[in-house]
Length: 99
Image (cartoon, rainbow, N blue to C red; front, side, top):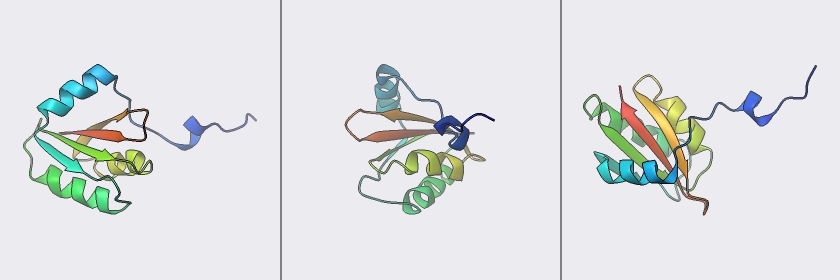
């Protein structure tokens, strides 16, 4: 039996490259600044915002709380497709496209 890896434990959304992340950020229909906020607040705010968007609209949450990069996409997986961008300086953007 092989030793479990991080990938066996956590199912992270696909990561975006810097250029794509910046372009999508500029085109977002709604932005949420969740820096300094911890779970479950970001999940609740994402759900509320997604419900108010039209199909194909894009919500972007900025966060510095690493667990949110996993928890937010899971919380809205029935409502939106998710991708995550990592800045390298501790800032993350969670891109949520309403289904």
